[in-house]
Image 1 (tube, rainbow, N blue to C red):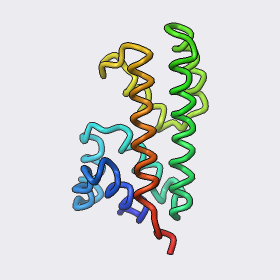
Image 2 (tube, rainbow, N blue to C red):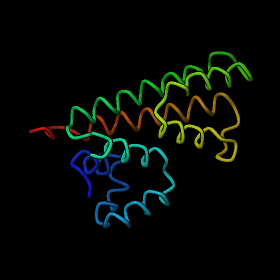
Image 3 (cartoon, rainbow, N blue to C red):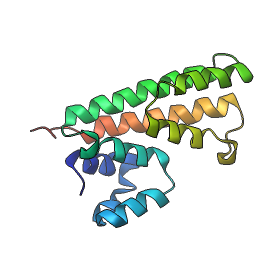
Image 4 (cartoon, rainbow, N blue to C red):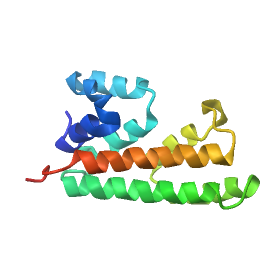
Length: 145
């Protein structure tokens, strides 16, 4: 089932928009996460799982901070140089990212998702960083007590 970090994240993410997933059993949760349409949420719930070694609030905060740093590197790469050079800079930044985060970034920055310019990519990654920060700030107060 969920650990307390995952529960806190689901309650905090997008102001609790996906907290309804807490009422599902494990099989329904996994299906719900796959079909919810939010790759960042899938990344967060997986990253904060006990199976991934996340057992304390400090672990969760560190993991979210690491993801934010990785996303910031990708975001900066989008404005490094326009066009092809930015694509190469993004690819280099992705090499330093967590595998789950890479999957989210590649989907989020795809043309199929409407991301067609470097500015689109910059803004989308910035939104993801803000969502991670909001979960980190709202989600883990007193969880290690």
